[in-house]
Every structure is written in C-alpha cells, then in structure tokens.
Length: 113
Image (tube, rainbow, N blue to C red; front, top):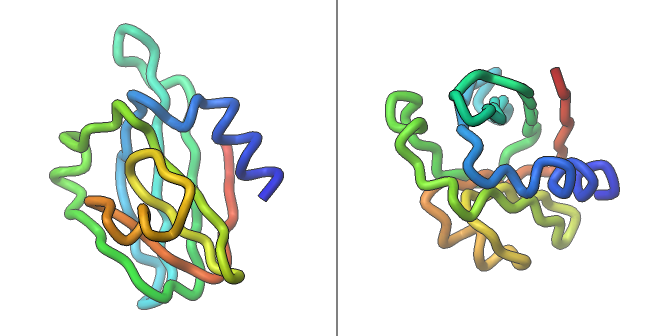
C-alpha cells in the first residue's frame, strides 16, 4: 500500500486526470490506463494499473471514459486482503461498491510511463 499511497499523493489522487482505457487481459485481469495532462491537454504521465484475480467490477465502455467526472479523482483501498479501485474519493470498501466505476481484485501492480 505504500507504493499506492505515494502514487495517489504524487498525482493528487488523479483529480482532473483521465481514465483513457480499460483493457481486458483475461476474464479476471484488466489494465486501467490513467493519463495526467497539462493545461493544454497534452499527456504528461501515463499510469497503468493492472488488476489480477478480479472478484467484482463495474466497468464502463471505453467510449464513455473520457466523460467521467474526475473532479474527485480516484480511490484505491485495501480491506480484507482485497484492493478496491473506484472513481471518486473514499476511504472504505463501501465507497467502492457505490462508485460509478470500480474494480475489486486480489492483486494490483502499477507501472508509470
């Protein structure tokens, strides 16, 4: 969780960032690509978050991801050995289940580009 928390702090919980895509690797693995942009809309940083052994999710189609309200950023929470990723700010798994888009998985890896 230290790496996750430092990433969230570094990018201000991805407030005003963009979820570029959600790519399915298998039935239980997905990669979420987040992009941090400058004031002119140019991509500055790309972050891939890979979720493995997905237990539950609500995924939106890639065509609507650019329209998600990212004013509150994202949350990544760990409870009961599960990681919860959700659009919006929260500190409990309950928030994850109520988010417009979420993923709950056993394992998570992060790659910054």
